Image 1 (cartoon, helix red, strand yellow):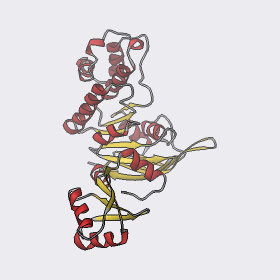
Image 2 (image 1 turned 180 degrees about the vertical axis):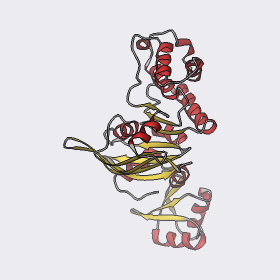
Image 3 (image 1 turned 135 degrees about the horizontal axis):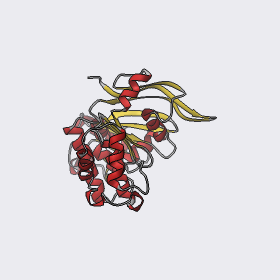
Image 4 (image 1 turned 30 degrees about the vertical axis):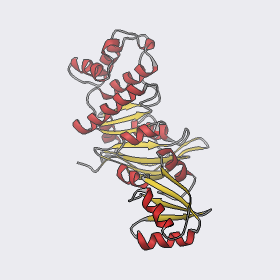
Length: 308
């Protein structure tokens, strides 16, 4: 098995004078759930369209499951389920007929496949409804059903939780994890709901203004976003020396205005407070915090210290 389901090598895409992607090199491991993070206009949808073959790169190379020649890429794309920007449906066609259309178009045998997708995405009760009558969340689920019909090796989903209520988001998260774990489907998804993405993805890529800022595993990201403690003390220099001497395994930063930031705390807050008071120092402020995915992305985008 190829290590990467998706590999982009120095991929750029221009629309006239506008550079949408700038030398992006990105790697999605086979069997992973990869979360693509970025603001509107960062290049997420453009990149997903390149993978799906909807547009073509200005320069660079796209590989799917190690394949890069046009004929082999086409074969790999037939094994890929895609939902980008808006679900593809016919407004006046019923939900079940829409799925049946795509089943036939993709050459998937067995009429039961469409029924299976209706149950899987909780659309069975809406199977006789015309697509234009569906709510936004139901249209999203229909788009997912279309993408998944035929059990693809790879799913590419652009904002799949758009329009879903909290229970719908939870159901989708559970479904994606099940598809990944039980059917070994590799999933690439983008979402503006970053806390949800953080609970779903195993790997992350951060895009800004068409450039890839960083790729990181979920485990490493959790470590960088772990609980930290900000302590404002009466004498910052002495307290920093005390920390280094008494708790040498701790990682900390000396910040402005008398603040010490301890990253990935290994002790209760009282231990750090006691260290100060036992040595004649007093605590002016003590705050426990955790870096959110939004904060991590903004810090990365603005050139801040990683892992702060």
